[in-house]
Length: 129
Image 1 (cartoon, rainbow, N blue to C red):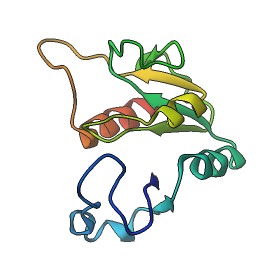
Image 2: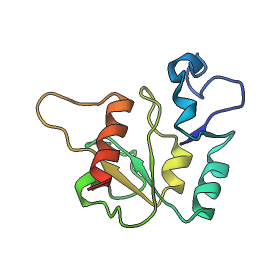
Image 3: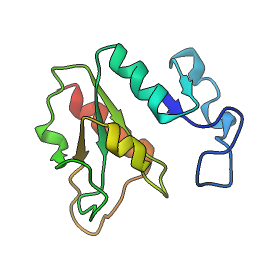
Image 4: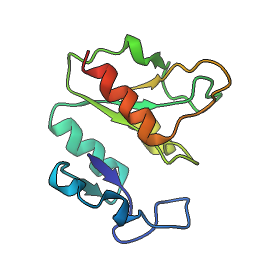
């Protein structure tokens, strides 16, 4: 997992820093790489051969740098990095611009958004199949 946030500071656009106690115990199973800016994260992922795709709402308006594809249409046969933004603010304009593409998670009914952990779980499950 790669995380972009200023070292020791709050996540841009929010008033609070990441809650370290939420991940208690997960450090045994998850390798976490922190980046102080978007470009260093993108450079790192690309150097490892990843294509980068940014999660966007189904109707993102003018906030789309690429024509988004549905999660089911993505090619997970290549090394793929999925980018999820802050639950309130989404993905930064810089990350949108630097990503290789955008994707959406289809939702039905009255649901307009998903908790970030649910969205990530759906994507990881779908990517395995």
